[in-house]
Length: 168
Image 1 (cartoon, rainbow, N blue to C red):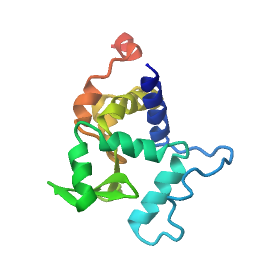
Image 2: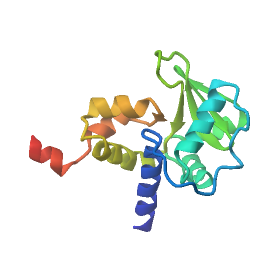
Image 3: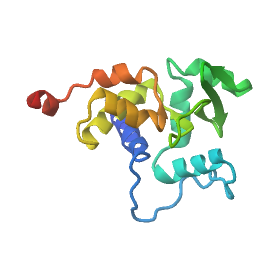
Image 4: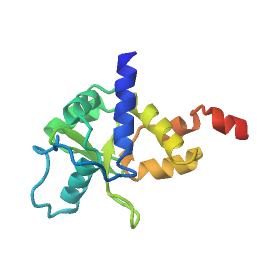
């Protein structure tokens, strides 16, 4: 049961990437991961990711991703080289699995943080609750801009929400 609570905390912190807030200054847990002088779009993306989620435990997140049922094979292959599947390029950066879209729409993030299946359900549920009880299509559109989640649309359709059920 404690593990579920830890996953929920991860989901809340990952969710902060969608809507970062300015809070009190705390010791930077990602100091070893920050790129000092970001020049490329990916380096700027990486620094934004770290700044927007200061409570995210990257080593633990990476460990969960490396053992994930769906992404563990991609993670393992990325240790040796970049993996390309369809229009997506997967690579590891400082132990974190990142997905790069090869053909992106304008104003859409080219890079996405890969979210393991064990965390994706809680992330989708938290997003649904925090952003006005959006339907599956809007949830997919909102989350897919920042995150790579296996079966995102079908997971978004499976959300059970008492508030939404009462409205319908």
